[in-house]
Length: 86
Image (cartoon, rainbow, N blue to C red):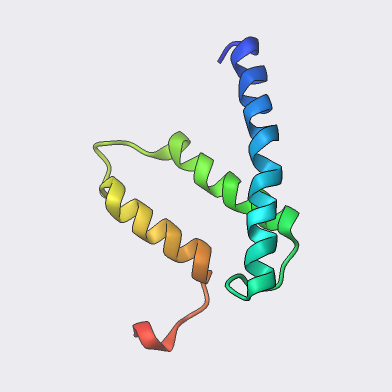
């Protein structure tokens, strides 16, 4: 990635981060998101979502829909066992 592209990406991210944190704060206030630090939550979620582009391979074992399903489940529910899924 060129330096100009990196700068452009950082600027886009700077514009998205506050909106993402605000969305998380609203979810906390309404009770749809567990109490957490919105900054840490936003960094964790955006980092996890952007990392997929680094490791995804079209010829891998899972298709994009399954990767999406599992990623969303992990991000929303964590790794804790859920008796309703056993």
